[in-house]
Each structure stands twice: as structure tokens, then as C-alpha cells.
View 1 (cartoon, protein in one colour):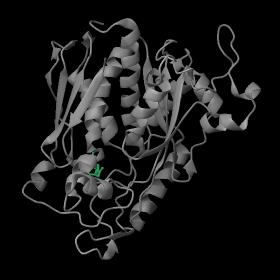
View 2: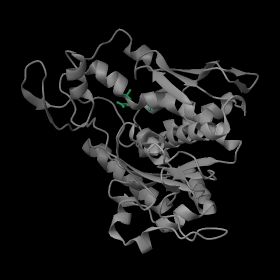
View 3: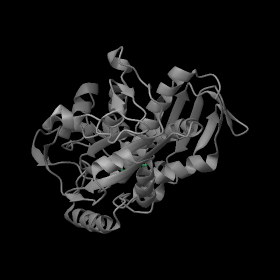
View 4: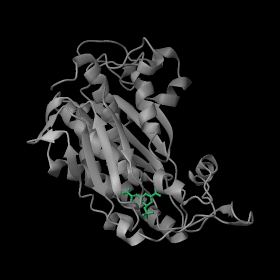
Length: 362
Ligand code: EPS
């Protein structure tokens, strides 16, 4: 069983992640891991914090001589910004609408929302991407790739080949991924990328934030990952939980998703033929199992709740109406969330693969 947990606060000493269940014998490198972390860190719309952190990651266990040993892998990612916050406590008294602030404060009985904000922060996703790197390396040995790209920021949509084509062709998915990697918003349509960047600039000027939509494609997954025999073994359920657990994600679909509800069965399902099916509207999952087609997920991220021009809130001490707390944050982090989603998807797919293949050595 492949599982991980993270620890750490946004402005504490650092983020730690422990990945348990990685088989022995998977080749890994510090440079590649750092590169994965840099893919998450950058992106148009990220705040000033992204320039402070360089995610100098340390692997403290589970890897020897460039290979996994089968023992738990521990990674430590120091927060460079910690020194600037040390000894400084800035309470958050006006919970931000859309943030974990309010419910977290009530739940844990704090007098202000700072401890909630520190752990709810998406800084934690650095740990997820570190774990996802190891899962990706395991999948890579089987020729399985997990790719992502952004298709929408706010109301601006990329003009891409139709969804059915994006879901069907591995070559097309690889092409979109490569284009996305060259875009500051991780969008494969460069003209739309420019409009998205302008929109992000406008939002920043107004003290506002933006969400968006991204897609994740898993190429070359064998049929039969996950199972129909029990609810919590279904691959789509496990992938959905993994992606929904990412900060800010509000919606998710597989394949044609909600659109499948609008058409009759004859136009919804993918005829079976040799050597390939003519369509992949199911998004590579039938009956809770991979079916050998591209696993295709689309996810919607809400705008970041920290607004520089804040919405109304209530001061938790005085109970007076006021503006919500504002502090340095990102304007848009959809491209980063897509990279985090790749990691979460890779971890679930690797876990499902280990179930069918055995997990001691690879
Ligand atoms: C975050 C707020 C920002 C982001 C941070 C997540 O940090 P700060 O409050 O220090 O400006 O930059 O993300 C990261 C530090 C990161 O590495 O992704 C939040 O509140 O979620």
C-alpha cells in the first residue's frame, strides 16, 4: 500500500512528507525532484512568496545510492520565509470567506485564525509533489505518464482540439503538455495564455483573485487498476478523493463528465473495437477500473480566498462587521494546482498498480 502524510506550516520551519510503501529499486535523483518542485512553485499569478522559496529539498531516508530501498521515504523542504516570521505572531481576527479560517477556528477552539491558516495553506502541497515525484518514477518504469495542462482561467478558455480528441490521442496529450510547460500559466494555447495573463494583471490591480480549470491525463495505464467489487476500491472514487483534497478544488469530472448526462446511451458510451476504441468519453474508467484508455480528469479550482480588496467578515473578538483579513498571497495558482494534481493522481495510480503487481521491489 502506497500512502503518505505531510506535516508543516506555511511559515514554520518547513514541510515534511513521509511516503510509505514505495518498492525498492526505483531510480531517483535530487535534481529531478527539485525540478518537479520548481514546476509547482512557478507560474504567472503567484505572489511574492514564490520568489523567496527555492524548495531546497532533503531526502533523509528511504533512498540509497540513487535508488529507493523499500523503507519509508522522508523528505524535508525548509521554508526560507520562516526567518521573516520567526517571533512574529500576526493574528487573523476577521476570517476570510472561502477560507478554512472560520470553521477551523471554531473546530479547534482558537482565539484567532492564524493557526488554521498556517496549516490549511497550499504551501503543504510542496510535500505532496515531493511524494508524487517518487510515484511518477515508479510509473515511468512501466511507461505510464501523468500529464496536466490548464484549459481555463476565470472566464477565458483555451481554444484546444475538441475534448474527445484530447482524451483519445496520447500524441495529442503529449503535445498539449509540452506546450503547457512552455506557458507561464501552463496553458497550451499561447494566445489564450496572453489573455489569461492580462486578466491576472487586472485581478491583481483590483485586489481580486482568479480560479480556473485544468485537465490531467494518465497515459498507458493498463486495464484493471482499481475494482468494482467494493466502493472504496473504485479507481475513480480514489482519484476523485485525491484531487478534491487539493486546496481550492471545487469540481471534478472524468471524461465527458456532466455532459454524459445530456445524451442518450448510444452517444455516451465508447464502442469496443480492435485495436482501438473510436472514443473515450468515459475518461478511461468503467466500473471503477481503468479500461486501458487515457484516464482523463478535469478539475475546477475556485479563486484564492485571500483578497487584497476583501469581502465582508466579522471580527471574532469584537463581533463587529469589518473587512476580511488581507495579507500577501497569490492572485492565481491554477497552474500550480495542476502540477499538484499530477502528483496526487500519480500516487493513486501507483498505489493501484502495486495492488495488482506486488510492491516489494520494482
Ligand atoms: C498560501 C499563501 C501564499 C502562497 C502559499 C500558499 O503564501 P504567503 O502567505 O507566505 O504569501 O505563496 O504557497 C506557497 C508558499 C507555496 O510554496 O506554494 C496560502 O495561504 O495557501
